[in-house]
Length: 391
Image (cartoon, rainbow, N blue to C red):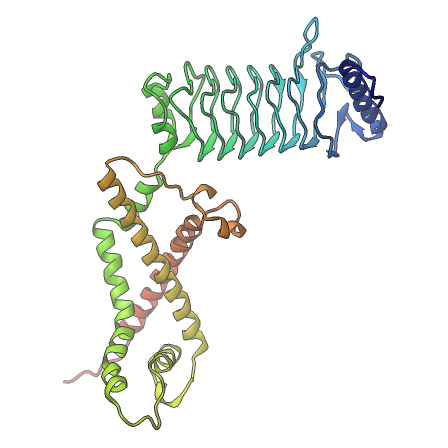
């Protein structure tokens, strides 16, 4: 690149280099599509137009770039138009990672099955097809998505404030921890059937957003606070607390009954600390704990699993009570999600996309059936005990 080159000459050379790279991988074409191509490190590229004779063309006259991966690419002012305009381009199954789309125009583009991860920039996607796409941690504030096909799209932790979604098709779409605001527009939606979205997201919309009562009836509005309340509030809360009391009562009684001995016993010969005695009591299932550790491994395994289940259950009980108290005091719904990482602290990032509350919730479901089976087994054992008949 020469220092005296004009910006237009540099841009033209970049486009030529881009097409040259496409030609260099022509052996990877399958049915007219580019597959398994990974371009990494092409930073700050600007393509003001697409050439008319690239290696692959669609039947509708557009350009096909299926299966490409773009990492840290700048698509600022990237426009898919010429005179006459070329439309119906295919970018199916592509991967955009940390890309900048500010000012770009992707009108009438086929993006089915494409992933957008940590992308940003206000863009135009009007009349494009984003069915089966994944948008995660993207900032598309102010973008245009009118008349888009968003069937079965998954949107996670994205900023969609001031976004225009008029006339869009949201059938089977799934929005998790998405940000709407009073300027998000949802007028004349083609379909909202089975559109999963958080209650907090819908509550952020204005009354004039365009979402009708009929639209809401077709949607699946998640309220995870209510989901917790179904299992850990009211009469069920009392039953959970009673069950926890029954489980921990023998250990509490053990501590209380031996506390006086530990507190006032003057002779320290032939004694053990109270925590050691409690550990032996738990491991030995309350039998011969004075004689040391004599575990029954089957019983010990079951006891540990039940202990973990009860700890998880208690934590969810406390969280439900805390959420209810917050709503009661503030008078407004609390933002809480069982399915989004937005509720997880950073030090638990190793758990993946699921937050800690989701793991606890799932563990509680499995633990419930395990505990129920254990109780049924104990009841059967009790009812089958032999008793003498006195005539």
